[in-house]
Length: 257
Image (tube, rainbow, N blue to C red; front, side):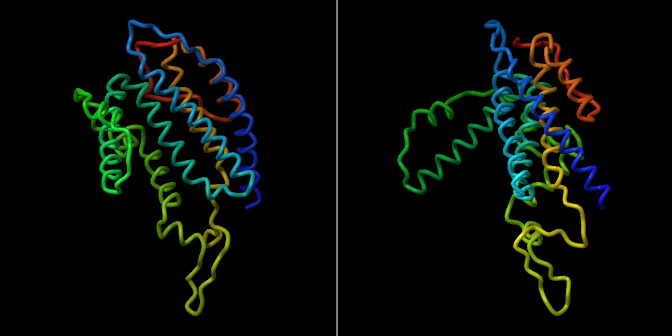
């Protein structure tokens, strides 16, 4: 167990350095766009990447304060953001159109809920969203996250489902705080305690954040003219113990620099 703890601590030390290097690389992002091209995938992906960067920072902060277990919603969000960025890098405009279709569905649900509650709101934006005509395309199959995660890899889907069990009020989440395995008593815990001395994956939270953040930035790099982050990403991967490859990501057209 001691060796395992040392390995986790070493991975997390690598993650702290790697996340810092990734943050510095993000500061070099380009903002010039080609007005003759559909640039939506670029700035939508950037918005997700910037949000993901803050989620990664939150994971590290929670871990350092002893709340790695409670960072499950953030780790889950990191998986979701990374998957969407890879999707944008691979499917481009079709992915953006599908995201707009999802926005129509969610805005309708929000509007219906507001109407049911009798809440006032400005209908201007909801009306515009609902009036938009969005053509169907093959990427519509990924409007829900499960099919997208399956496409990106079964391990990613498994990790997301696992984090969901801890992020939501499930029996799995509750069982981290009690032990009813004895016949004559139940042990109640005030802190998360895994049974049978099992290792807690949450101990690796910073490294998980690093791996997912690197993967997302590698995908975003394919949306930049000339992929200027490539060399830096490979260096960061080597220093952080990553293999530095993401099969299936590629684009024949770069949209921004």
